[in-house]
Length: 228
Length: 228
DNA sequence: GCCTTTTGCGACAGCTTTGTAACAGATGGA
DNA sequence: TCCATCTGTTACAAAGCTGTCGCAAAAGGC
Image (cartoon, rainbow over all chains, first blue to last red; front, side):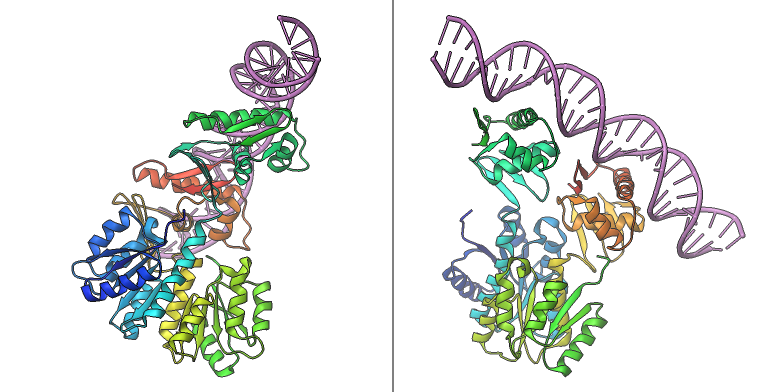
Protein backbone atom coordinates (compact mmCIF):
# COMPACT_ATOMS: atom_id res chain seq x y z
CA UNK A 1 0.00 0.00 0.00
CA UNK A 2 2.83 2.36 0.84
CA UNK A 3 5.23 0.94 -1.73
CA UNK A 4 7.18 3.39 -3.85
CA UNK A 5 5.77 4.11 -7.30
CA UNK A 6 7.49 1.97 -9.93
CA UNK A 7 8.61 2.90 -13.41
CA UNK A 8 9.50 0.40 -16.09
CA UNK A 9 12.28 1.71 -18.30
CA UNK A 10 12.55 0.09 -21.72
CA UNK A 11 15.68 1.25 -23.53
CA UNK A 12 18.33 -0.75 -25.35
CA UNK A 13 21.11 1.85 -25.29
CA UNK A 14 23.04 1.24 -22.01
CA UNK A 15 24.29 4.81 -21.56
CA UNK A 16 20.85 6.34 -21.88
CA UNK A 17 19.29 3.67 -19.73
CA UNK A 18 21.77 4.35 -16.99
CA UNK A 19 21.24 8.09 -16.85
CA UNK A 20 17.46 7.69 -16.92
CA UNK A 21 17.51 5.01 -14.23
CA UNK A 22 19.70 7.22 -12.06
CA UNK A 23 17.39 10.20 -12.36
CA UNK A 24 14.26 8.14 -11.78
CA UNK A 25 15.79 6.52 -8.73
CA UNK A 26 16.85 9.82 -7.21
CA UNK A 27 13.31 11.10 -7.73
CA UNK A 28 12.14 8.29 -5.49
CA UNK A 29 10.89 5.80 -8.05
CA UNK A 30 11.50 2.11 -8.00
CA UNK A 31 13.08 1.43 -11.38
CA UNK A 32 12.54 -1.75 -13.38
CA UNK A 33 14.67 -2.10 -16.48
CA UNK A 34 14.18 -3.93 -19.75
CA UNK A 35 16.38 -3.98 -22.81
CA UNK A 36 14.02 -5.51 -25.33
CA UNK A 37 10.30 -5.33 -25.95
CA UNK A 38 9.67 -8.96 -25.13
CA UNK A 39 11.65 -8.67 -21.92
CA UNK A 40 9.42 -5.72 -21.05
CA UNK A 41 6.32 -7.81 -21.70
CA UNK A 42 7.49 -10.46 -19.25
CA UNK A 43 8.17 -7.91 -16.54
CA UNK A 44 4.79 -6.23 -17.08
CA UNK A 45 2.99 -9.56 -16.81
CA UNK A 46 4.78 -10.38 -13.57
CA UNK A 47 4.94 -7.04 -11.76
CA UNK A 48 2.86 -4.38 -13.51
CA UNK A 49 4.61 -1.01 -13.08
CA UNK A 50 2.82 2.26 -12.45
CA UNK A 51 4.31 3.99 -15.49
CA UNK A 52 6.23 2.79 -18.55
CA UNK A 53 8.99 4.80 -20.23
CA UNK A 54 9.33 3.33 -23.68
CA UNK A 55 11.94 3.95 -26.34
CA UNK A 56 10.55 3.82 -29.87
CA UNK A 57 13.52 2.09 -31.42
CA UNK A 58 14.11 -1.31 -29.93
CA UNK A 59 15.58 -4.46 -31.41
CA UNK A 60 13.19 -7.35 -31.99
CA UNK A 61 9.84 -5.94 -30.83
CA UNK A 62 9.64 -2.20 -31.49
CA UNK A 63 8.43 0.23 -28.85
CA UNK A 64 5.46 1.30 -30.90
CA UNK A 65 4.36 -2.30 -31.43
CA UNK A 66 4.71 -3.05 -27.72
CA UNK A 67 2.66 0.04 -26.96
CA UNK A 68 -0.09 -1.11 -29.33
CA UNK A 69 -0.19 -4.51 -27.68
CA UNK A 70 -0.32 -3.07 -24.18
CA UNK A 71 -3.19 -0.78 -25.06
CA UNK A 72 -5.15 -3.60 -26.70
CA UNK A 73 -5.25 -5.71 -23.56
CA UNK A 74 -7.66 -4.67 -20.85
CA UNK A 75 -5.27 -5.75 -18.11
CA UNK A 76 -2.48 -3.41 -19.21
CA UNK A 77 -4.48 -0.65 -20.86
CA UNK A 78 -4.51 1.45 -17.73
CA UNK A 79 -0.74 1.69 -17.40
CA UNK A 80 0.43 5.04 -18.79
CA UNK A 81 3.08 4.86 -21.50
CA UNK A 82 5.50 7.70 -22.20
CA UNK A 83 7.10 7.20 -25.56
CA UNK A 84 10.64 8.48 -26.01
CA UNK A 85 11.97 8.88 -29.50
CA UNK A 86 14.58 10.55 -31.67
CA UNK A 87 11.86 10.79 -34.32
CA UNK A 88 10.82 14.40 -33.88
CA UNK A 89 8.76 14.72 -37.02
CA UNK A 90 5.13 15.65 -36.63
CA UNK A 91 3.95 12.42 -38.33
CA UNK A 92 5.94 10.32 -35.87
CA UNK A 93 4.75 12.21 -32.82
CA UNK A 94 1.15 11.89 -33.95
CA UNK A 95 1.59 8.23 -34.80
CA UNK A 96 3.02 7.55 -31.37
CA UNK A 97 0.14 9.26 -29.65
CA UNK A 98 -2.47 7.59 -31.87
CA UNK A 99 -1.02 4.19 -31.08
CA UNK A 100 -1.99 4.68 -27.48
CA UNK A 101 0.97 6.45 -25.88
CA UNK A 102 -0.08 8.83 -23.13
CA UNK A 103 2.75 11.24 -23.83
CA UNK A 104 5.49 11.62 -26.42
CA UNK A 105 8.88 13.10 -25.66
CA UNK A 106 11.45 13.88 -28.34
CA UNK A 107 15.19 13.33 -27.86
CA UNK A 108 17.10 15.32 -26.82
CA UNK A 109 14.74 16.07 -23.96
CA UNK A 110 15.02 17.99 -20.72
CA UNK A 111 15.49 15.50 -17.91
CA UNK A 112 13.68 17.72 -15.44
CA UNK A 113 10.69 18.02 -17.75
CA UNK A 114 10.65 14.29 -18.38
CA UNK A 115 10.56 13.64 -14.63
CA UNK A 116 7.70 16.12 -14.35
CA UNK A 117 5.85 14.27 -17.10
CA UNK A 118 6.41 10.95 -15.32
CA UNK A 119 4.86 12.45 -12.19
CA UNK A 120 1.91 13.74 -14.25
CA UNK A 121 1.16 10.23 -15.45
CA UNK A 122 1.63 8.91 -11.94
CA UNK A 123 -0.93 11.35 -10.54
CA UNK A 124 -3.51 9.72 -12.76
CA UNK A 125 -2.86 6.16 -11.72
CA UNK A 126 -2.32 6.36 -7.99
CA UNK A 127 -5.41 8.10 -6.59
CA UNK A 128 -7.66 6.47 -9.16
CA UNK A 129 -7.70 3.13 -7.42
CA UNK A 130 -8.32 4.50 -3.95
CA UNK A 131 -11.84 4.89 -2.66
CA UNK A 132 -13.43 2.30 -4.87
CA UNK A 133 -12.02 -0.72 -3.11
CA UNK A 134 -12.61 -1.23 0.58
CA UNK A 135 -10.29 -3.57 2.44
CA UNK A 136 -10.33 -4.95 5.95
CA UNK A 137 -8.23 -7.88 7.05
CA UNK A 138 -8.55 -10.50 4.33
CA UNK A 139 -11.85 -9.10 3.05
CA UNK A 140 -11.89 -7.03 -0.14
CA UNK A 141 -14.98 -5.22 -1.36
CA UNK A 142 -14.92 -3.62 -4.80
CA UNK A 143 -17.66 -1.04 -5.32
CA UNK A 144 -17.03 -0.80 -9.04
CA UNK A 145 -17.26 -4.46 -9.93
CA UNK A 146 -19.63 -5.24 -7.04
CA UNK A 147 -17.43 -8.10 -5.98
CA UNK A 148 -16.38 -9.35 -2.60
CA UNK A 149 -13.38 -11.58 -2.01
CA UNK A 150 -12.04 -13.18 1.11
CA UNK A 151 -8.44 -14.36 1.03
CA UNK A 152 -8.76 -14.58 -2.74
CA UNK A 153 -11.97 -16.63 -2.78
CA UNK A 154 -15.09 -15.01 -4.18
CA UNK A 155 -17.93 -14.39 -1.76
CA UNK A 156 -21.41 -14.45 -3.26
CA UNK A 157 -23.75 -11.93 -1.68
CA UNK A 158 -27.27 -10.73 -2.36
CA UNK A 159 -27.88 -6.99 -2.80
CA UNK A 160 -28.90 -6.43 0.82
CA UNK A 161 -25.94 -8.29 2.25
CA UNK A 162 -23.65 -6.38 -0.11
CA UNK A 163 -24.93 -3.06 1.16
CA UNK A 164 -24.74 -4.28 4.72
CA UNK A 165 -21.10 -5.29 4.33
CA UNK A 166 -20.32 -2.00 2.60
CA UNK A 167 -21.72 -0.21 5.59
CA UNK A 168 -19.57 -2.21 8.01
CA UNK A 169 -16.44 -1.86 5.89
CA UNK A 170 -16.75 1.89 5.56
CA UNK A 171 -16.25 2.12 9.31
CA UNK A 172 -14.58 -1.03 10.53
CA UNK A 173 -14.90 -1.60 14.26
CA UNK A 174 -17.76 0.80 14.70
CA UNK A 175 -20.84 -0.63 16.33
CA UNK A 176 -24.02 -0.07 14.36
CA UNK A 177 -27.38 -0.33 16.07
CA UNK A 178 -30.09 -2.20 14.22
CA UNK A 179 -31.86 1.10 13.72
CA UNK A 180 -28.76 2.67 12.19
CA UNK A 181 -28.40 -0.28 9.84
CA UNK A 182 -32.06 -0.13 8.86
CA UNK A 183 -31.53 3.51 8.07
CA UNK A 184 -28.38 3.04 6.03
CA UNK A 185 -29.10 -0.23 4.29
CA UNK A 186 -32.85 -0.23 3.85
CA UNK A 187 -33.50 3.51 3.78
CA UNK A 188 -35.05 6.03 6.04
CA UNK A 189 -38.69 5.54 5.12
CA UNK A 190 -39.06 1.83 4.49
CA UNK A 191 -40.49 -0.07 7.42
CA UNK A 192 -39.17 -3.50 8.20
CA UNK A 193 -38.96 -5.41 11.46
CA UNK A 194 -35.86 -4.75 13.55
CA UNK A 195 -35.20 -8.47 13.75
CA UNK A 196 -34.82 -8.62 9.97
CA UNK A 197 -31.38 -7.11 10.46
CA UNK A 198 -30.38 -10.16 12.52
CA UNK A 199 -31.37 -12.48 9.73
CA UNK A 200 -29.36 -10.59 7.15
CA UNK A 201 -26.35 -10.35 9.42
CA UNK A 202 -26.66 -14.10 9.83
CA UNK A 203 -26.72 -14.57 6.07
CA UNK A 204 -23.72 -12.29 5.63
CA UNK A 205 -21.85 -14.23 8.32
CA UNK A 206 -22.63 -17.51 6.63
CA UNK A 207 -21.40 -16.28 3.26
CA UNK A 208 -18.20 -14.86 4.75
CA UNK A 209 -17.33 -17.90 6.84
CA UNK A 210 -18.09 -20.28 3.97
CA UNK A 211 -15.31 -18.50 2.04
CA UNK A 212 -13.01 -19.51 4.87
CA UNK A 213 -11.83 -17.96 8.12
CA UNK A 214 -13.47 -16.90 11.34
CA UNK A 215 -16.66 -14.92 11.67
CA UNK A 216 -15.49 -11.32 11.25
CA UNK A 217 -18.70 -9.79 12.61
CA UNK A 218 -18.99 -9.12 16.29
CA UNK A 219 -22.34 -9.11 18.11
CA UNK A 220 -22.55 -6.40 20.71
CA UNK A 221 -25.26 -7.58 23.02
CA UNK A 222 -27.84 -4.92 23.68
CA UNK A 223 -26.43 -2.61 21.00
CA UNK A 224 -25.93 -4.09 17.56
CA UNK A 225 -23.16 -5.36 15.30
CA UNK A 226 -19.68 -4.38 14.23
CA UNK A 227 -16.99 -5.57 11.85
CA UNK A 228 -13.79 -6.79 13.44
CA UNK B 1 -20.44 7.68 -26.58
CA UNK B 2 -23.35 8.99 -28.51
CA UNK B 3 -22.85 12.60 -27.59
CA UNK B 4 -19.83 14.27 -29.14
CA UNK B 5 -16.83 14.82 -26.90
CA UNK B 6 -16.58 18.42 -25.78
CA UNK B 7 -13.53 20.64 -25.43
CA UNK B 8 -13.42 23.89 -23.53
CA UNK B 9 -11.10 26.37 -25.20
CA UNK B 10 -9.82 29.16 -22.96
CA UNK B 11 -7.91 31.76 -24.99
CA UNK B 12 -8.19 35.53 -25.02
CA UNK B 13 -6.58 36.17 -28.40
CA UNK B 14 -9.45 36.05 -30.97
CA UNK B 15 -7.35 34.95 -33.95
CA UNK B 16 -5.81 31.99 -32.12
CA UNK B 17 -9.13 31.06 -30.59
CA UNK B 18 -10.75 30.97 -33.98
CA UNK B 19 -8.20 28.74 -35.64
CA UNK B 20 -8.20 26.35 -32.67
CA UNK B 21 -11.98 26.23 -32.54
CA UNK B 22 -12.10 25.54 -36.26
CA UNK B 23 -9.66 22.66 -36.02
CA UNK B 24 -11.33 21.17 -32.98
CA UNK B 25 -14.74 21.38 -34.62
CA UNK B 26 -13.55 19.73 -37.83
CA UNK B 27 -12.07 16.94 -35.71
CA UNK B 28 -15.57 16.27 -34.44
CA UNK B 29 -15.41 17.96 -31.06
CA UNK B 30 -18.09 20.12 -29.58
CA UNK B 31 -16.27 23.35 -28.80
CA UNK B 32 -17.04 25.56 -25.82
CA UNK B 33 -15.22 28.88 -25.77
CA UNK B 34 -14.16 31.17 -22.95
CA UNK B 35 -12.16 34.38 -23.11
CA UNK B 36 -11.31 34.82 -19.46
CA UNK B 37 -10.51 32.48 -16.61
CA UNK B 38 -13.61 33.35 -14.64
CA UNK B 39 -15.81 32.87 -17.68
CA UNK B 40 -14.21 29.45 -18.02
CA UNK B 41 -15.05 28.65 -14.40
CA UNK B 42 -18.72 29.42 -14.99
CA UNK B 43 -18.88 27.20 -18.05
CA UNK B 44 -17.12 24.35 -16.24
CA UNK B 45 -19.56 24.57 -13.33
CA UNK B 46 -22.53 24.45 -15.69
CA UNK B 47 -21.48 21.96 -18.37
CA UNK B 48 -18.25 20.19 -17.46
CA UNK B 49 -16.27 19.59 -20.67
CA UNK B 50 -14.32 16.40 -21.41
CA UNK B 51 -11.04 18.26 -21.94
CA UNK B 52 -9.81 21.81 -21.28
CA UNK B 53 -7.37 23.65 -23.53
CA UNK B 54 -5.96 26.43 -21.45
CA UNK B 55 -3.78 29.37 -22.42
CA UNK B 56 -1.26 30.34 -19.74
CA UNK B 57 -1.57 34.08 -20.25
CA UNK B 58 -5.08 35.31 -19.61
CA UNK B 59 -6.34 38.66 -18.37
CA UNK B 60 -7.81 38.69 -14.87
CA UNK B 61 -7.42 35.09 -13.74
CA UNK B 62 -4.31 33.49 -15.25
CA UNK B 63 -4.39 30.08 -16.84
CA UNK B 64 -2.01 28.60 -14.33
CA UNK B 65 -4.09 29.87 -11.44
CA UNK B 66 -7.27 28.50 -12.99
CA UNK B 67 -5.52 25.16 -13.45
CA UNK B 68 -4.46 25.15 -9.83
CA UNK B 69 -8.03 25.84 -8.72
CA UNK B 70 -9.49 23.15 -10.93
CA UNK B 71 -7.09 20.53 -9.66
CA UNK B 72 -7.75 21.52 -6.05
CA UNK B 73 -11.45 20.72 -6.25
CA UNK B 74 -12.50 17.08 -6.33
CA UNK B 75 -15.36 17.73 -8.76
CA UNK B 76 -13.13 19.14 -11.47
CA UNK B 77 -9.88 17.33 -10.73
CA UNK B 78 -10.67 14.60 -13.20
CA UNK B 79 -10.99 16.90 -16.21
CA UNK B 80 -7.74 16.80 -18.19
CA UNK B 81 -6.08 20.19 -18.75
CA UNK B 82 -3.72 20.87 -21.63
CA UNK B 83 -1.77 24.01 -20.96
CA UNK B 84 -0.73 26.08 -23.98
CA UNK B 85 1.98 28.67 -23.54
CA UNK B 86 4.54 30.82 -25.28
CA UNK B 87 6.75 30.22 -22.26
CA UNK B 88 9.00 27.49 -23.58
CA UNK B 89 11.61 27.54 -20.85
CA UNK B 90 12.14 24.36 -18.90
CA UNK B 91 11.18 26.02 -15.60
CA UNK B 92 7.85 27.12 -17.06
CA UNK B 93 7.07 23.76 -18.56
CA UNK B 94 7.84 22.01 -15.30
CA UNK B 95 5.88 24.57 -13.32
CA UNK B 96 2.85 24.08 -15.57
CA UNK B 97 2.99 20.32 -15.16
CA UNK B 98 3.56 20.53 -11.41
CA UNK B 99 0.54 22.79 -11.05
CA UNK B 100 -1.63 19.97 -12.25
CA UNK B 101 -1.71 20.31 -16.03
CA UNK B 102 -1.94 16.95 -17.76
CA UNK B 103 0.08 18.12 -20.74
CA UNK B 104 2.04 21.20 -21.74
CA UNK B 105 2.36 22.44 -25.31
CA UNK B 106 4.65 25.27 -26.32
CA UNK B 107 3.74 27.91 -28.94
CA UNK B 108 4.27 27.73 -31.81
CA UNK B 109 2.91 24.21 -31.87
CA UNK B 110 1.92 21.75 -34.56
CA UNK B 111 -1.86 21.81 -34.88
CA UNK B 112 -1.97 18.14 -35.88
CA UNK B 113 0.06 17.15 -32.84
CA UNK B 114 -2.09 19.26 -30.56
CA UNK B 115 -5.19 17.52 -31.87
CA UNK B 116 -3.49 14.17 -31.24
CA UNK B 117 -2.73 15.27 -27.68
CA UNK B 118 -6.36 16.30 -27.17
CA UNK B 119 -7.42 12.85 -28.27
CA UNK B 120 -4.90 11.28 -25.87
CA UNK B 121 -6.48 13.11 -22.95
CA UNK B 122 -9.90 12.18 -24.24
CA UNK B 123 -9.04 8.49 -24.29
CA UNK B 124 -8.73 8.66 -20.52
CA UNK B 125 -12.23 10.03 -20.10
CA UNK B 126 -13.86 8.04 -22.86
CA UNK B 127 -11.67 5.08 -23.67
CA UNK B 128 -11.43 3.66 -27.18
CA UNK B 129 -13.26 5.79 -29.66
CA UNK B 130 -11.42 4.95 -32.86
CA UNK B 131 -9.20 2.38 -34.44
CA UNK B 132 -8.39 0.26 -31.44
CA UNK B 133 -8.66 -3.43 -30.87
CA UNK B 134 -10.09 -4.29 -27.47
CA UNK B 135 -9.30 -7.65 -25.97
CA UNK B 136 -10.60 -9.42 -22.92
CA UNK B 137 -10.04 -13.08 -22.27
CA UNK B 138 -10.67 -14.82 -25.59
CA UNK B 139 -12.89 -12.04 -26.92
CA UNK B 140 -11.46 -9.64 -29.51
CA UNK B 141 -13.33 -6.55 -30.62
CA UNK B 142 -12.01 -4.52 -33.53
CA UNK B 143 -13.36 -0.98 -33.61
CA UNK B 144 -11.96 -0.39 -37.07
CA UNK B 145 -13.49 -3.32 -38.89
CA UNK B 146 -16.45 -3.59 -36.50
CA UNK B 147 -15.76 -7.25 -36.05
CA UNK B 148 -15.83 -9.46 -33.00
CA UNK B 149 -14.06 -12.77 -32.62
CA UNK B 150 -14.11 -15.29 -29.84
CA UNK B 151 -11.24 -17.77 -29.69
CA UNK B 152 -10.73 -17.18 -33.41
CA UNK B 153 -14.35 -17.75 -34.42
CA UNK B 154 -16.30 -14.79 -35.75
CA UNK B 155 -19.19 -13.54 -33.64
CA UNK B 156 -22.00 -11.93 -35.60
CA UNK B 157 -23.52 -8.99 -33.78
CA UNK B 158 -26.09 -6.35 -34.63
CA UNK B 159 -25.12 -2.68 -34.21
CA UNK B 160 -26.72 -2.37 -30.79
CA UNK B 161 -25.09 -5.51 -29.43
CA UNK B 162 -21.76 -4.29 -30.84
CA UNK B 163 -22.02 -0.99 -28.99
CA UNK B 164 -23.14 -2.80 -25.86
CA UNK B 165 -20.14 -5.11 -25.97
CA UNK B 166 -17.84 -2.15 -26.67
CA UNK B 167 -19.13 -0.49 -23.57
CA UNK B 168 -18.48 -3.59 -21.46
CA UNK B 169 -15.04 -4.14 -22.94
CA UNK B 170 -13.89 -0.60 -22.32
CA UNK B 171 -14.20 -1.25 -18.60
CA UNK B 172 -14.18 -5.00 -18.01
CA UNK B 173 -15.54 -6.01 -14.64
CA UNK B 174 -17.30 -2.78 -14.00
CA UNK B 175 -21.00 -3.04 -13.27
CA UNK B 176 -23.19 -0.91 -15.49
CA UNK B 177 -26.72 -0.11 -14.44
CA UNK B 178 -29.41 -0.41 -17.09
CA UNK B 179 -29.70 3.37 -17.01
CA UNK B 180 -25.98 3.81 -17.62
CA UNK B 181 -26.17 1.42 -20.56
CA UNK B 182 -29.18 3.19 -22.01
CA UNK B 183 -27.19 6.38 -21.76
CA UNK B 184 -24.05 5.04 -23.37
CA UNK B 185 -25.49 2.69 -25.94
CA UNK B 186 -28.79 4.30 -26.91
CA UNK B 187 -28.00 7.92 -26.11
CA UNK B 188 -28.93 10.43 -23.51
CA UNK B 189 -32.20 11.62 -24.98
CA UNK B 190 -33.72 8.58 -26.68
CA UNK B 191 -36.40 6.90 -24.63
CA UNK B 192 -36.56 3.15 -24.57
CA UNK B 193 -37.84 0.80 -21.91
CA UNK B 194 -35.37 -0.26 -19.27
CA UNK B 195 -36.15 -3.90 -19.93
CA UNK B 196 -34.99 -3.52 -23.52
CA UNK B 197 -31.46 -3.64 -22.15
CA UNK B 198 -32.14 -7.11 -20.78
CA UNK B 199 -33.26 -8.34 -24.17
CA UNK B 200 -30.16 -7.02 -25.88
CA UNK B 201 -27.89 -8.41 -23.19
CA UNK B 202 -29.63 -11.72 -23.78
CA UNK B 203 -28.96 -11.48 -27.52
CA UNK B 204 -25.33 -10.57 -26.90
CA UNK B 205 -24.98 -13.51 -24.55
CA UNK B 206 -26.46 -15.87 -27.07
CA UNK B 207 -24.12 -14.69 -29.82
CA UNK B 208 -21.08 -14.95 -27.57
CA UNK B 209 -21.85 -18.38 -26.18
CA UNK B 210 -22.73 -19.74 -29.63
CA UNK B 211 -19.15 -18.91 -30.63
CA UNK B 212 -18.07 -21.24 -27.83
CA UNK B 213 -17.19 -20.87 -24.18
CA UNK B 214 -19.02 -19.79 -21.06
CA UNK B 215 -21.28 -16.80 -20.74
CA UNK B 216 -18.84 -13.94 -20.08
CA UNK B 217 -21.49 -11.52 -18.88
CA UNK B 218 -22.37 -11.40 -15.23
CA UNK B 219 -25.79 -10.36 -13.96
CA UNK B 220 -25.60 -8.32 -10.79
CA UNK B 221 -29.04 -8.63 -9.32
CA UNK B 222 -30.51 -5.30 -8.37
CA UNK B 223 -27.76 -3.38 -10.15
CA UNK B 224 -27.07 -4.33 -13.73
CA UNK B 225 -24.57 -6.22 -15.84
CA UNK B 226 -20.80 -6.54 -16.12
CA UNK B 227 -18.27 -8.30 -18.31
CA UNK B 228 -16.23 -10.95 -16.54
C1' DG C 1 -28.86 -22.62 39.48
C1' DC C 2 -33.00 -20.41 37.49
C1' DC C 3 -35.40 -16.96 35.12
C1' DT C 4 -35.43 -13.21 31.70
C1' DT C 5 -33.79 -11.03 27.77
C1' DT C 6 -31.45 -11.18 23.64
C1' DT C 7 -29.66 -13.37 19.62
C1' DG C 8 -29.07 -17.25 16.00
C1' DC C 9 -31.06 -19.45 12.44
C1' DG C 10 -34.02 -22.89 9.66
C1' DA C 11 -38.18 -22.75 7.09
C1' DC C 12 -41.31 -20.74 3.96
C1' DA C 13 -44.60 -17.98 1.44
C1' DG C 14 -44.65 -13.99 -1.28
C1' DC C 15 -42.49 -10.89 -4.00
C1' DT C 16 -39.18 -8.73 -7.14
C1' DT C 17 -36.01 -9.23 -10.62
C1' DT C 18 -34.35 -11.43 -14.65
C1' DG C 19 -34.43 -14.62 -18.95
C1' DT C 20 -36.46 -15.35 -23.17
C1' DA C 21 -39.74 -16.46 -26.94
C1' DA C 22 -42.80 -14.23 -29.83
C1' DC C 23 -44.31 -10.52 -32.59
C1' DA C 24 -45.00 -6.39 -35.16
C1' DG C 25 -42.87 -2.56 -37.10
C1' DA C 26 -38.65 -0.33 -39.15
C1' DT C 27 -34.82 -0.34 -42.12
C1' DG C 28 -32.12 -1.05 -45.95
C1' DG C 29 -30.41 -3.78 -49.78
C1' DA C 30 -30.99 -6.27 -54.22
C1' DT D 1 -41.09 -4.56 -54.93
C1' DC D 2 -39.65 -8.47 -51.79
C1' DC D 3 -36.62 -10.28 -48.46
C1' DA D 4 -33.51 -10.40 -44.73
C1' DT D 5 -32.16 -8.28 -40.70
C1' DC D 6 -32.58 -5.61 -36.73
C1' DT D 7 -35.57 -3.14 -33.10
C1' DG D 8 -38.38 -2.37 -29.01
C1' DT D 9 -42.16 -4.18 -26.43
C1' DT D 10 -44.79 -7.48 -24.20
C1' DA D 11 -46.08 -11.52 -21.57
C1' DC D 12 -45.00 -15.35 -19.06
C1' DA D 13 -41.82 -18.53 -16.68
C1' DA D 14 -37.91 -19.21 -13.86
C1' DA D 15 -34.76 -17.83 -10.56
C1' DG D 16 -33.41 -15.71 -6.57
C1' DC D 17 -34.12 -12.66 -2.66
C1' DT D 18 -36.78 -10.84 1.25
C1' DG D 19 -39.14 -10.39 5.49
C1' DT D 20 -41.44 -12.77 9.15
C1' DC D 21 -42.18 -16.32 12.39
C1' DG D 22 -41.02 -19.65 15.82
C1' DC D 23 -38.19 -22.04 18.59
C1' DA D 24 -33.55 -23.18 20.28
C1' DA D 25 -29.44 -21.43 22.17
C1' DA D 26 -26.74 -18.08 24.55
C1' DA D 27 -25.92 -14.40 27.74
C1' DG D 28 -26.71 -11.88 31.68
C1' DG D 29 -28.76 -10.78 36.29
C1' DC D 30 -29.30 -12.16 40.90
